[in-house]
Length: 83
Image (tube, rainbow, N blue to C red; front, top):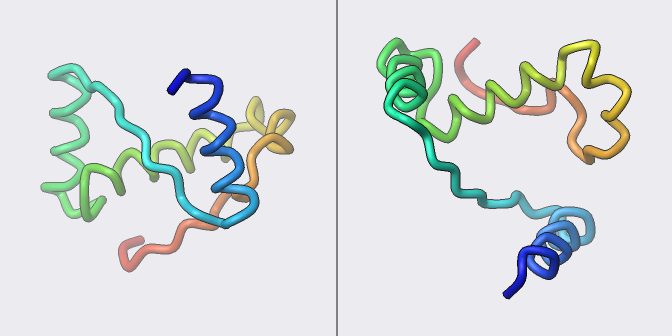
């Protein structure tokens, strides 16, 4: 399946069905060590949670505000048992 078709399918599933999208990411040793440190410190529950929190923080930046209309999930919508 081409990337274009896969992206359209993912967009449909997110917008029409309200499903979360699963993405794979390759992290280098330094990035992985940072993510693991956040988990070990208790800041995030899992590696995925740490990455999701980082994306949420980017959404809070003023530069992101102009492109927020392209994202269906508002900033701060993530709920967690940790502060």
